[in-house]
Length: 266
Image (tube, rainbow, N blue to C red; front, top):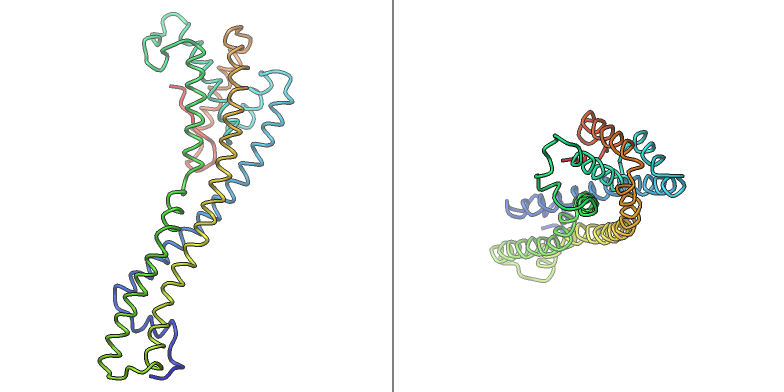
């Protein structure tokens, strides 16, 4: 065997079905990892920018009616606006529950006081946003933890076949063993090359998600205080109803994946 012929292509040409299956698995894992890195990175950056803009509008608004107008204009396409939209939807449910002849007071979704209904709506919004933020995290964690061992398995399998071939040829000197064994070690290197970006991406996205959810939980207390006061004094029920109907109608007319967060008013 000529040393110049050794390398990854030589290893690939002489590998069996199991070794090639291992390579295909790591190729799939690598493509999925980089897809999630690009997509989640873009979505997270856009969501952060939109959230910052909405919070600026929210805290600069003279009243909740101005916030409702902003939602009617832009929709609830990021977590903080989505949270406020759920709050407006809860107010609309309270309004419908209080209207005679609606027959909705006995439904479980309407059980409890107005404050209980608002609390459940805000919690439901946070849970929905948590699910969206954690999209792809399980895949990244699996790739980061499993691919080094998959690569190691490929290396062991490659060394086993290399040693069998060397034993069959009857040439067991170091210069004959080092080449095939070195080729097999490429599988371990590929496994690490796939796992490291997945581990880094998982940690980065997990930290970003924790920060967003912590801010969202803190913001939920402020939203509850503002909207609970609105429920008691009823100065904005008309705006709440218009906002809920408008945003839900917008969500229904959007195609899937358009970025509008759908929220059921139950």
